[in-house]
Image (cartoon, rainbow, N blue to C red; front, side, top):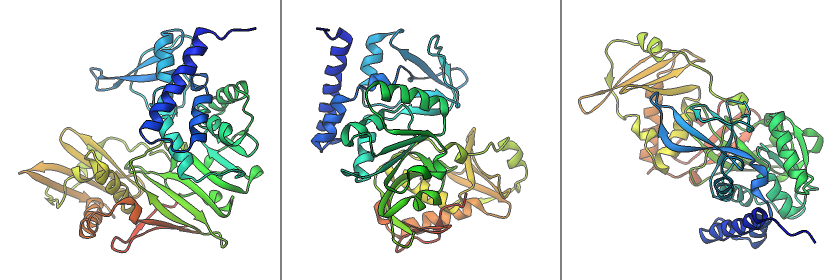
Length: 399
């Protein structure tokens, strides 16, 4: 008889403890999902990851520390069973986990999403027994494993655009006995060989709803995805596909964000000083400062998404005390400077970017600051429009 190692015993205890914590905070209300959390060995899907120590270096860059079993087994195992997102890749490049080094800065491009959010996504998508499911963004494979544990592997398809990431996830999944359909594919185009699906769930974000996903969903089926953009405003939407091929559904409450699908990432916009140099010397008093959409809190988080729908190609950056908006597609720019307790705005180009922002904030305030759940998204062909009784003129960008 083979006795389990101390590490295996500890992992089982940590899984049970994590499941108990998730149940205690309301992340799990279905005992079958709770069982899945207790059964899936998350540590098998994260052989190495990075965590931030909360400090910035002398250049203002985030310091990321590597965590592996070889470096510190206890820390690695404990972190694997924390309700935290574990970063596994930066800048589309896999680290050398045989000799990992401390990182300074970098853009996370793959991760193992925090378990509470994974469970929330599967629950919000209303996945049931016998549903065929497409998961976009396999990542570490942990979310895929939970779905396989809960529903079986036969009806689960998971795709990822990163071949190396998928290979690592596949090894972990198959090693744990899960056998979903896996494929290297671009999430913007779904996966036609396995279509049509009853549910599509995306663990990445899109600037607008890909038409292929609507086409690959059965009438009555549902699509759960996160919408984001170049202002980093985010919203989740649950769409139901109709018999006529249109899709409609509400925005969901909460402040959830995912990494963008790589083809939808914001383009480089150059030197803000070059953009500001083309603005008029004198401006006007801004009706609102940038804090209306940058402040911490759910209202600003939601408003930032609405604003983004009005200026979908704008990006925002700060240099000193000044805040700049630039639109690389049409060449418009705006700059906000603190002045006499308020803000002065200077604008140039075919689109008055901050004027559009102010129009959305005006409408939002006049409507009583409505929450996400009061908005619905209608997708009909290439037209994707947010619908609200008092806030109008909001469309997702065509991409």
